[in-house]
Length: 405
Image 1 (cartoon, rainbow, N blue to C red):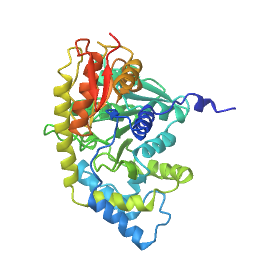
Image 2 (cartoon, rainbow, N blue to C red):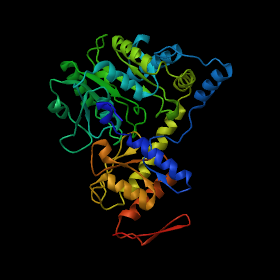
Image 3 (spheres, rainbow, N blue to C red):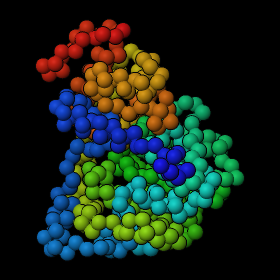
């Protein structure tokens, strides 16, 4: 069978594949613990459910405008004004079938083949393949000091004549790192001076801990005209625990939004009317669910950190946001794929290999599940990895025996 050259370069999403593996194991009745997931366990806000139900009850579930229904665009405008201090016009806004689609539409609209996109390591698993899908070149940049926090010098060193775009994701998936305001300001200034597009993937920006405030890239932008190359991406999936609703958005200059909307029109048409109404309910409704989720995640993070610090060989940088941590397990195995598979095979704990995020030796561990899952999952991992662990471990009524050193 003949497939395209681009298709040959694209692999499956590691995180989605692991979700599938966990679901299959659970369906078989296996006591799997999924520490690799990216879905908050909280329920969608009641306002979102009621808004969707009202539309369903009307029976008027029809096609929508390609860039989103007016009510959702108005909600996004209000949201942007509240959290970014800038009130965009309707022509600055496009709603989409998730933040991922908004990013993909921007890549299609901006990039030519062989142009380059820079993003810091560790990075979200989809960035490299999304860039490849439009024929462009992903350029991951590893912070020179080995941390999760890059410096502007790291960006400058890999910028060349083919560089067209920089993508920043803060708080960061997979590390939970929150980029300092000084770094974001430096990148905004650098991109404006070099004429580069800057995509701020802000999907986790309200899930931030320890009393911090989200960093607002617009605060540092000198160019707020219709020629601005700053693009803000956000959505309802993470902060409102509405992952299955698949509604995201982009805020950018009107010319780019028009092109992105044209592209979206040919690829998928407008987002689902039902799910857009749900998103309106979430954004305009009572916001206590966001605060409750943030506090739950912060507590879960603290539990996870306490558990991980009991390992002799694990190095961990404290996440400042999201619901992920990215500890270094290279003391036990530098090959993160082998290590992740070992933990799945031996103790049925799902983790995501660090190699998928551009950093070998690490595992992405999620703390968006229950405290019980976190405690038991880390206990199983420690039993599997620590040579001083007891020879036996019970998972329910099943007895496991260490047959490895």
